[in-house]
Structures are given as structure tokens and as C-alpha cells.
Amino acid sequence: MAKIAQKCPEIPVTVVDLNADRIAAWQTDDLPVYEPGLLEVVQEARGRNLFFSTEVDQTIAEADMIFISVNTPTKTYGIGAGKAADLKYVEACARQIAKVSTSSKIIVEKSTLPVRTAESIKRILDASENHPNFQVLSNPEFLAEGTAMQDLENPDRVLIGGEQTEEGLKAIQALVDVYAHWVNKDHIITTNLWSSELSKLTANAFLAQRISSINAISALCEATGADVDEVAHAIGKDSRIGPKFLKASVGFGGSCFQKDIYNLVYLCEHFGLPEVAQYWAKVIEMNDLQKQRFTQRILRSLFNTVSDKKIAVFGFAFKKDTNDTRESSAIYICKDLLVEGARLSIHDPKVSKEQIQKDLELSDSEFSNKIEICKNPYDAAENAHAIAILTEWDSFKTDALDYNKIFSVMEKPAFLFDGRNIVDLDAVRKIGFEAIGVGKPEEKV
Ligand code: UDX
Image (cartoon, rainbow, N blue to C red; front, side, top):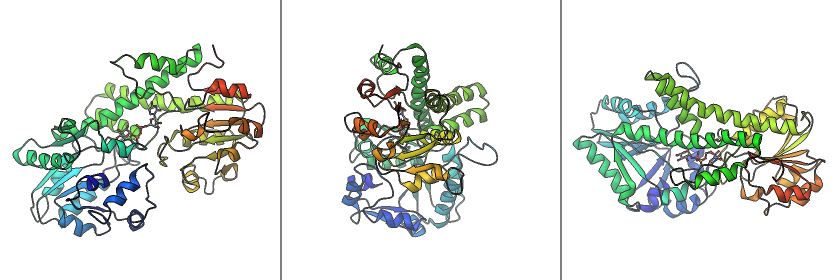
């Protein structure tokens, strides 16, 4: 919304939320979300045509176009628990819009939703007693965290789905006109509603599948002495495959991939396609395996026990340049290490101490005194037996950190497990580290 406000100064954009603290934070320069470049865009538009408010009903009543951007977590209860998207917030939102609207509106699904949700939204809206005319559009968001502002500035594509009726096409055009302020028309794709909804899930499933595929190969590389980065480079040169999303890792995290694939799996099951469901479920299984393999590798290397050994964890966010930890592999790996009896000293440049404590469920946990959260990587490494790099922050790269200094304060033998393949293994081996990457040969071959 900040980007739209920045690019379309004549359109007033109001962001509403029930959470007053969050809205208050958006009025300050300490935004609730860390994203490079976001503050500048907010500052440019805030107070001009970008507003933040808790006046939900009034803002709905005055709006011509409403973007529903509520969360759609995986259901934790009842039918579809663990897979299906929980649509209670979307439904509540649609009901509120239906209740307070007196004029025609275009409703845009921005939340990632299962296929055919637009239909449900439309039915709820059409039951409104005031009988205004509603058009529902699907406009999924493809930005990735950490690069969100660039992705919004130069999107590969903007996708807008709507009903293929005269009214529907008019609504689609109204949203096309908003994006056309800065996005080239060739990059704006319009489709029917269901194609748009399904494209979002499909894009994320394909991206996650590439990571699981290369991570599956990383296991084979470790067994054979092949180097996964060399394999990825070689196959990425094939223009049919391409170089992106082939970085082996400790497994993907983030708010989207796992949730969207589960969603797809649930849809397939719902439509009587169990084999198709299993096919996609394997992408997640492989991701879980990749996290477990990493912990097992640490255990094996540390002479089969980490009990009471200190392990320095570098990075907790699900990827660099964000403070988001949702589904971060670090959460699973840290929990597994704690169960094995390890002591952890965790450092992340952007994730807060409170967030880490919350993710590891430390309040009244037996593990709470086993964890230390450190402001810098040097403190974290003090007397540690091993370092585990779990997020690819630039500040952990070989030329950004003084690995000599780190080596000097660690227990020996000093191990370095690079879960993101960002460290020059040969360079740190020269210092004296026993260095281990994902899908990398143990020593130079
Ligand atoms: C993703 C999609 O990219 C985006 O289009 C969609 O709208 C939302 O979900 P995001 O979750 O922000 O975006 O991050 P992304 O860059 O896709 O990374 C997801 C996870 O995959 C991260 O944990 C990342 O570290 C991991 N990853 C990514 C790899 O392990 N290897 C890669 O090669 C790429």
C-alpha cells in the first residue's frame, strides 16, 4: 500500500488495522516491519496520501477499492488441520465490509487464498442488506521479503484475476490503471479469478520445489564428494533450468512456502487427487529432512554428543535482510540441538531477543537457562565448540567477520557448520577450523 501511495499521489490510501499499537508504530519511524527501503517510501507518502488508522468501519464506507490483506494461517483445528488455510479472518473481514458498505466497491484479495475463495467472499458480500454492487478481484503478491521494495518497484509481473463479465472486466481495468502508474503494461497479466488464485500457490510450490530438489542433491553430494554449488552452477547454465533458487541451504522457511504447499496439498486431496497431493507433500518432507540432516551432521562431527557443549548460532531469521522468523529453519535446528543437551549462544543482526525467546518457547521451559542471546558474533563464539551459520547475512561472510579472532576464542577443535554456503571453506580451514558446508566435500578434492 505504501508503494501504491508513493506512485499514485492523487489516490488516498488508508491502511486500517484493529491493532492500535501496530497502527501507532506505522506513524513513527520505528516501523513494525524491517524491510530495506520501506521507511523512505512510507516517509515520502505518509500524511500526503498514505494514512494509518483504526477507524475500520468509516474507512470501509468511504473506500472505492478495498484490499483484504489479513493473515491466512494454516488451520490448527478440525477438518484440514495442519494443511488447509484458516479463512476465519478473511470471512470476518468480508462480513464487516458487507455490514458497513452503502456504495459499490471493488474488493481485492491480497491475502494468499485457496482457489475459489473469491466465490465465498462474493457470496458473503452479496448477502449485504444494503445491496451495493461488489466486484471481487484476486491480486496475489509475489514480492519476497528482504527485496520487497525492489520487487514492488520492478515486478516480474502483476497478476489480476476477475470475473469475465462486463462489470468484472471494468473492475480489473480499474486495478490495472493503479499499477500502470509505474508498471509497464506488458507486465500486468489479467486472468479469470481461479487462474489468478491458483497461480500464486503454483509459483510458490515451484520455487520451493527447486530448493527441495537442490537440497536433495546436496545429500548426494555429501555422500559422493561432488560440490553442490558446482552442480547448481552447471545445471543453472542450462537456459531451460536457469540459475535462480538453486542455493542449497538448511531448508527453506518463511511465511509462504510451507503454508502454500500444504494448501495445494489440501486442495488436491479435496478434489480427489491423492497422488498429486503426495507429489507436492514430498517437497515439504524433503525440507524437513534437510533441517534434520544438518543437526545430525553437527552431532556426528562433535563426536556424537553435543551434551553441555556450547554452540554459537549465527542467524535466526528465515533469510537475510529481514527480521522475520516465521518457519525459519533456525527454530527447528535450535530446538533439536537443545533436546540433544546443547547450550546455545544465538546472534542475529535484526531479530530481537524477545522474538527468539518466543520462537523457542522459552518461558517456563527447561531450556531457558541453556540459551544466551548475543549482540555480536564474537561474544556468541566465546568458548563455543562449534558455530552454526543458519542465515546468510552478509555480515557472516569470510571477508566481513574476523574468523581469526573467532577461532582464537573457541574451544578446540573448533567446528564451523555453514548451513548457507557463504563462507570460503578453504580460507577458514587454513585458520584451523574444521569447516563443513551443505553438499560440500569434507576437504578440497
Ligand atoms: C516467497 C516468494 O519468493 C514470493 O514470491 C512469495 O510471494 C512469498 O514467498 P519469501 O518467503 O519472502 O518469498 O522469501 P524467498 O526469497 O522466496 O525465500 C524463501 C526461503 O527459501 C528462505 O528461507 C530462503 O533462505 C530459502 N531459499 C531461497 C533457499 O534455501 N535457497 C534458494 O536458492 C532460495
